Amino acid sequence: MSVPKPLLLLILGRGRMGQSVQSTAVSRGHEVVGMFGRDDVASEAWPEADVAVDFTAPGSALEVFEACRRRGIPLVSGTTGWTEHWGTVEHAVQQTGHAMLWAPNFSVGVFLFRRAMKQVQSELADHDFSLRLTEVHHAGKLDAPSGTALSLAADLEEAGADSVPVTADRLPGVPGTHTVMWENEVDLISLEHAAKNRSGFALGAVQCAEWLVLQGPPFDKIPSMEDVWG
Image 1: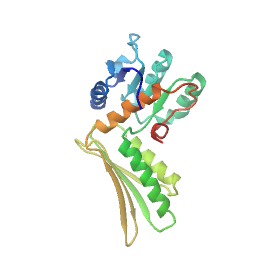
Image 2: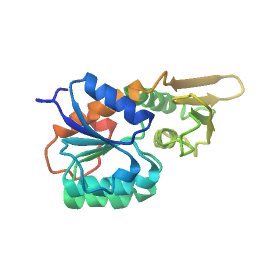
Image 3: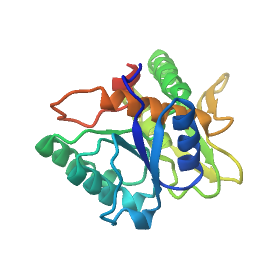
Image 4: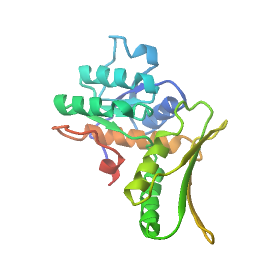
């Protein structure tokens, strides 16, 4: 995908992901017009922007959405831990036509991993396998289990699994590892995705921003990675 001109991109979140998104956006020829911390979201002095990318914190998600909606700035959100408010945000998107894309994980590798995982689950659904899912992230990640792990569990259940047990660990320096294991008395089958660094997440987020600004109204749902890469 390619946009006709460099984007004016506002980054919400000055942490490691925000910094990685900044470097990736600049490397793809875009202009980063600002990097806001959580306290800056309430400011009225927002720069002109074509799109905003949000990696703040769960408690800021609704405020970020509303601030972008008021200003008509399309929003790409990678913030997790707020989906108990999904119905409220989706209703606002439908009522106002605001462009917002959300994903718990922007890595294209994770997107392909989810597809492979669902295929394996479909093949094994009628056989006698127990199933478990584990995830490990860096010690600073606030939500546990991760939004990605919860999405993987939902994918597995959609593909025929019963309730999926999820375990979460927090260790220093781990960008993100998700492992799905199917096991019975004679076999252990596993699939794992391990991020080597944050660059894959940042690239996916910027690519989603490029995709979102090319979409036209009406915006009557919150698109996901399936819409971008499906």
